[in-house]
Amino acid sequence: MKNRSWKLEDAQKIADEFPYTFYKPSSEVVSQLQVGNQAKLIFEFESDDPEAPKAERMWVEITDVKDGVFSGYLDNDPAYIKDLKHKDLIEFTECHIIDTDLDDPVPSITEKYIKRCFVTNNIFYEGRPVGYLYREEPDYDDDSGWRFTAGDETDEYMDDSDNTSYVSLGAVLREDDSILALLDREPGVAFAKDEHCNFVELND
Image (cartoon, rainbow, N blue to C red):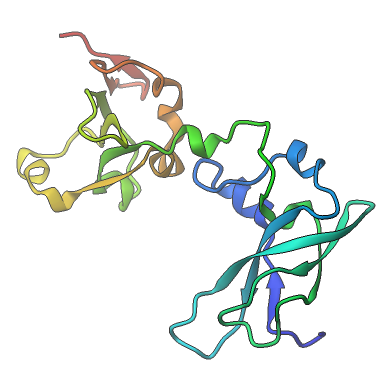
């Protein structure tokens, strides 16, 4: 298997880079994994197929745990990876695990910020910081009610729906988490940055 086409993705690195949008099981739940439990891993692979994804996410049933190293057999049939098949032996460690078949006792930060919001593309695609935000009563069941702008968008810009994205709060935090401390506030609030780049609550 030295020349195998695949390798296990280091999921911890992804979680460190995208903590608000990428779920990584806690060390507490990983410590509970035993023989017979399952863990999901990311199998990154090379392919000549232009339609193929960069990775497959598949389950492994654990058959042994020793000194922090898990062994198990692949419990899926790969759709694209040619040199990997169901029941193949896989060795992995905690950094590779992206899900388990156990309930995680530690609340997930990704779940906390899974509700959606409206954000201007100045922030979401152009990399500008949030300059003005407000929370209204949600429009939809999955809506947080939060609205984020850079603060200097024109009326013409805001009137064009193509300039706004409807995404998770976590996706906005990935771009600018300076707003984090404000997100538990109730509907009806609004904030703008002052000349010192601090958020100030606005009063009607």
